[in-house]
Amino acid sequence: MILIFDLFQTLVEDIHMDFNLGLKPLWETYYRDKCSFDEIKAYGEELFVYMQDLHKKGFEFPFVNDELPMYAEKYGGDVIDMSIEEEAEFLSRCNEERVFDGLSEMLDVFRKEKIPMFVLSNSGFRAGALRLMLDSYGIGRYFERIWSSADFGRVKPSTEFFDMAISEILDLYPDSTKEDLLFVGDTYETDIVGAHNTGLKTAWINRNNASDVNGFATYQIKDITELRKKHIV
Image (cartoon, rainbow, N blue to C red; front, side, top):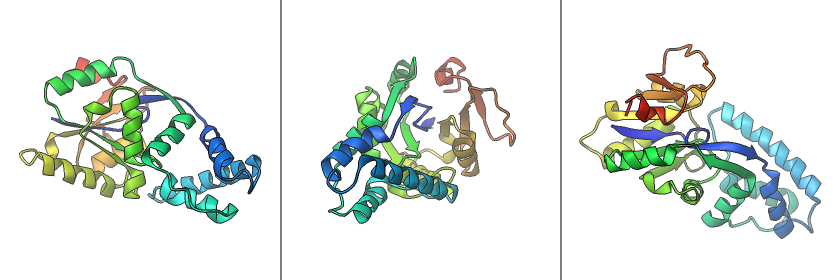
């Protein structure tokens, strides 16, 4: 078996998210003399709505490649050349998260059993920044590759996004087939629908006893560690 995980609310729990906690230091460094913080904050809220509209159409709004140039266009100055490390720092300022209880121990067991593991995430932040975030929680080492929609340009449930990851995995493991892959995620509309439509088996982390209206979930669990407890993996 080969495992592909969603990231947010699957591997790590979002406790609190506030984009402005990352935006304010950026404003202080690059835009203090060009606009007030309230102005750039309001513009950030406009761009959030724009991002939501793009997501509905299946497209991502990458923070570094698309959003940062829009701040420069609106307020003047050079486009910020943000490194992966700086992007990861911005992300850490915005998000307060924690690894789910028992996850590290389960991943360690899977690694000892030589089960390949990957991450496929909808995120406006690049895969390198997500990797650094997972490293900071001590679990990045378990995943061979991390794919972010910020790099690919499309968001789950886009089958193109899934197909890209599947193709790379099967190139790495040519003796495997799509039937050997299991996608694990918490959001039905993006994770489970997208993975099913791409022909993958799915494990849905269904914490709220929601209805599997389409019958797309191969397995249903309430907690990620049930992958092991229920002998799914």
